[in-house]
Image 1 (tube, one colour):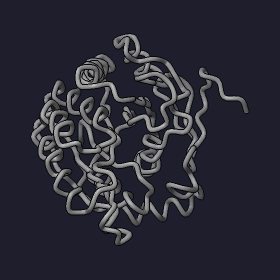
Image 2: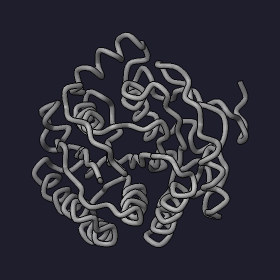
Image 3: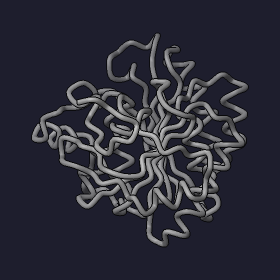
Image 4: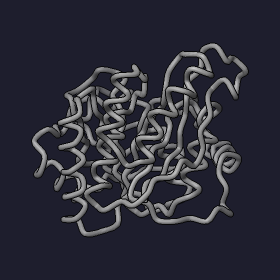
Length: 274
């Protein structure tokens, strides 16, 4: 198949590597990472990691277990591949996964692109990108009627991230239905466990304080390699405009706690905003 920028079907890029491509095995894996007995509350937004499930699945599972997932989810993730424009949004079609196809919410996607000139209707950035794909199994596990709006961001800075966040909030208001905003992000990359925990705590404290500007400044000043800083700023800004009241750290851990290598780890945080 020849991919074109206007294609409307996005096939899995990391199934079989980051998570199982076998739906039966994938269900069992997700059950191991989630807790169906958790008290679920509505949330405006979350931060969830996007590494291989053996590393970050427990953190992602804990945050998804704690929330009610509406039928429509805006997914905002970092662009690791360098493909596509600065802010790529797919506005039509569907994404395939081991659990079946997920339709793009074309109405909400159109509202977003009508309101925000930064958004470019683009599929190229999404073809090989894993940051949004890794959220789908958890979302589908809990919400069988899932629809998504996928947004992939390069390093766009504070002002544009804030602008996108405000547009997301305004678009959700116009859409007039419940929508969850998922910011996909890992935390610090490839430092020691102790250094990672210390740096990540600085960033997490600003998230818990609902302080996107402080988060951005701290990440820059302390050189915290949080890959989804822009998605997090977008989500926090949107939630603030929707009158968020609190954020909770559901779980945090590093890859070193999984594989025993404490000298070169990646941090993972699961956070809800309500």
